[in-house]
Length: 192
Length: 195
Picture 1 (cartoon, rainbow over the protein chains, first blue to last red):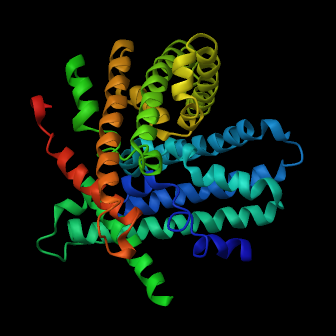
Picture 2 (picture 1 turned 90 degrees about the horizontal axis):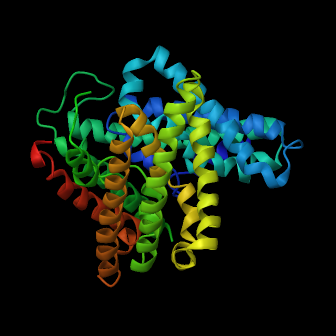
């Protein structure tokens, strides 16, 4: 259980470890895209952790990185094709960022740091926890940007009359995450 | 997709769709290595070098091997392995024949493998259905755009090191605000040359 909750807050991959930034900014222009990306990443993370951890006694140490990459890219390919078949609008919105899950540093990082040295079931939970931590942050950013930039949440009817388009455009992503980090740092400073 | 001139492809990749500031690809290195000018220059050189070669190689691989054999679904696995192997090969080759360049790029080359921009360009030229020449011009444009953005960003960050900034905003938050302003500036290139 501890393996699962670690990733959610205390070792949150994005806010604490500062990795996996590209998808975080690129696909968070609306809450629904952010949720799609989060679920896809969680799926890949959890199952590649599971497979790598089950095979860890068979993988020679010198060859572990190429093997990790092949396992991860297999799951990314599955995600890519499933999404293209069942969720075409989401697939079009996410574009090149679906295949790019393969170079998301969170996934390779967890394979190396956790799955290669722990039992299968723990690794699955660790992957799911880290993935959900990532999903949580990306959805929060998606909601902030969508509310301020388009006046909607998950595509509901518009409740802000004059939204600022800038929040949906690329600069909005940088501003939102910069402010979030600033607020986090500020609350840490105050507690000291 | 309608024909776009090589000129258009180059400038669109360089400025209008700048890979770092507008497309949001390769940001880990953008924030990671942009503390000192020399480091970001070294990284950009390595990116220019590796990106151009690797996108040419992945183009040949995709159009002459994967497509004829109906193996498009292996695209993701092959591209990433090929790029990783290619970086190793380039490193060996440079160590043997162009030692000066090897000395200059040395430590940045392995880092480039994990730079998602390289892999992204490999997928994007497949998506856009570019010809071989278009692919090479496109990757040149993208990598030069990377260089421009990261050099300017490093310059601004170095100046701000000594500025009086409220403690909670020091470091990464400020870097994000700078990036936001630069991205706003690059949005202004939209519509340049009618693109």
